[in-house]
Image 1 (cartoon, protein in one colour):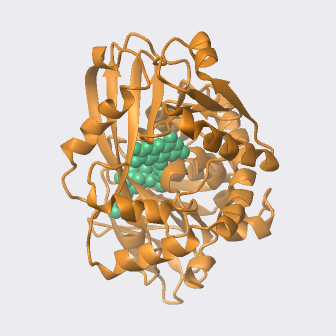
Image 2 (tube, protein in one colour):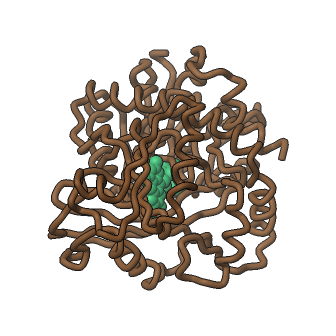
Length: 421
Ligand SMILES: Cc1cc2nc3c(=O)[nH]c(=O)nc-3n(C[C@H](O)[C@H](O)[C@H](O)COP(=O)(O)OP(=O)(O)OC[C@H]3O[C@@H](n4cnc5c(N)ncnc54)[C@H](O)[C@@H]3O)c2cc1C
């Protein structure tokens, strides 16, 4: 593949992992990003490497979203709007919130889960990236006794895909880790997963790519894709007018991938789901591992001497000012689960976007309508975790290698399914 050149648009976790896997295969790679600060969702996320995670399209999720539509402090909030695109997305989302679809998704996501751990650990070892990665599992932390059985049943359902969970009562949880409040009823431990510092991962990976000879151009905004006279995609056009030419182009620009694809007549319909994080210093009892507080949907992760609280899912157009009350809901919602939250000092606040498809699955692979173009986006709340395996899938596609996951399973993430509606 020595002479082949690929341009990757987007230096988030998905673009960088794709660049990494291509570089390992001897491809000449150029990564383009409009930012130089690495402040996308790939750095601001909760840092749960939660393999076997359920997609957004869980049965009942659409009804819950509708119920919460009039409460702008709820964990999942859809800003009311009559945008035809949003209404189409919501309808399609609703039609996918059922058991049969979830089972189809989980077969694919669980197969990807094992591969993504392998890909991540191989990359961290080979490049000696220090990003606080620990395979310590994550906890579904349950405050109300009444929710324990349902949480345990969700955990057990994963065993059919080979994933392990462990039910831990409140007293035992506090014996193992003094960080949890007395009112917490218990937890489900997702044993096979891990936690990570996402910003350190992204920056470490960017440094490793530079050492491997990959060109990363920051502060360059891509305004569209370029076609040749045969209709093939031959690179990306920058705001300056420069065209970065390549045999293949990978669109990994998160939520912005759709508008860039549209410039070449291709659609990747997605909605932006904004999330927030707050970083606390000086919390007296840092938990040993990370997790999600079940009733408030807030994720937590100890990162060095700090605690990150992250969450809330707000479907609203990109660029609207972020909402103070949703940011404040993070600390307020964590208080009843973790000791000493109020002793913490806020060192950083952040908001960013998850790219969400209406069927809850990412979009990975070649775009049939535009030869030369590949997409890698739509990972919603699983992009950190699925980034490494996504890189492998795209690199194998571009280099004509067999995939390590059955094509029948990969059909659930292929771009063709969107065209079929
Ligand atoms: C609050 C929150 C918590 C989350 N927690 C987790 C978690 O615990 N685990 C997990 O697996 N996932 C989590 N996620 C989801 C995860 O962060 C995303 O799925 C993932 O970061 C998407 O990565 P990406 O590379 O596709 O996009 P992004 O990270 O958005 O990167 C896209 C890049 O493209 C660049 N770009 C865009 N447009 C252009 C352009 N025109 N020209 C040049 N460059 C451009 C941007 O600057 C950006 O750097 C969370 C997300 C949020 C918001």
